[in-house]
Length: 253
Image (tube, rainbow, N blue to C red; front, side, top):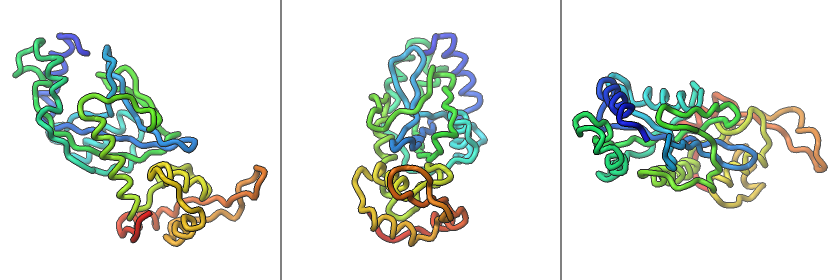
């Protein structure tokens, strides 16, 4: 929670440089050791958890604002971002308003605004992310998707909507380029899909369908080590993958 002095300085800067009433909230998905992860923030002097987010500068395009906010939290420049919903419940910012309403007059208090927030989900390589807190938070870190604490405001709804949207997109778009390491096996990719969809998939059907998309390069050598027959390593064919994102696939899982 900000002090009165901090709130005054923060609100003055926000009124001068950012658009009122519009915010951006991001659900950042990563995948590590067979577990789906989500990036969350713990606020200063609050037992409260939030998704990464921020505000849009007055002369800044929406996509540029989303990329800036995510770079500040992850350290990454090239992020797969998908806008998925606008959240505008009149009561969504009530907690912040109540928290700070007695510190400053409403005209000076940035948190007295009603904010519509634009939701984005991001798919990133877990190993390349440097989780970085913003000026209002004390820590930023990866949390297993099954262990997410209660999120403040409407951030639990934003997370659920992002996951539902990702599952829907999985029916007609490839997923994995931004989540998997450079080389991977088909069982590892299948584990990613099963984790997102929260259901088991038939191994042979999964491999047949994925290879039929023509978006992979197969290594000449299988992965070495292990007690069983070593599976072959694959990598994404970047050009074919980008084309598949545009053209889409048919059928669901």
